[in-house]
Length: 235
Image (cartoon, rainbow, N blue to C red; front, side, top):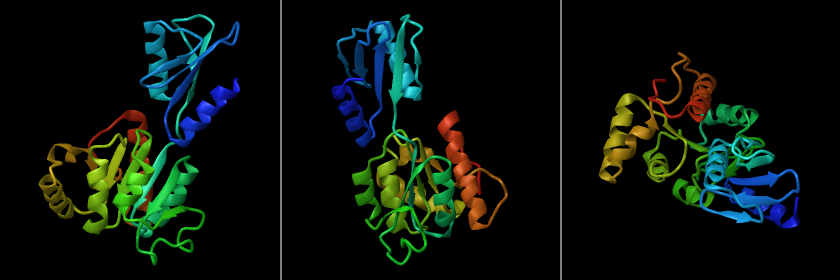
């Protein structure tokens, strides 16, 4: 692979931007494509472009059925879980999600909560959620869960997540708490998007302990990632 191609791949990975490299195996000619552009010495027809972008959107690498001898290699960002609120559930959820292959960031400006002692080996942010999310970004490989039970932390995160490309948005709280949350989000002009929020959060596994709730949250995040959005029915 050419040095310039490797540099493009590295830059895309740093920006968490999906990139596809299509190679003609007979001579090594290549083109690089993303959702908006296609560059390189290998021309692709409209049909080939559509197939390659379809593979890219699903994060799959494969030979192109529309072009014999062409192989498309997808470079996509790993799934990421952003947790707002360094609470007991987050202490259980963070290592579980990391073991499942997610990049995990716990966001909480309260230093007594978001400490290395409580979250060993976990990436922590002591920024306010709106600041952290503006820096980290919310792409289509990102899930966000708001667990703090504090509107000063959860609401700003949800306000940024709802219009974003994040594939999953969940918020902890009772139905009464969620109704009040919805009222605030409607007042912020986000009423049409509030249906994206999974609340009560997690699959209804019947658990009530923090670790059990963490299992239900991670299970729902994985379910939505592979099967698409669906109404949350958890506890």
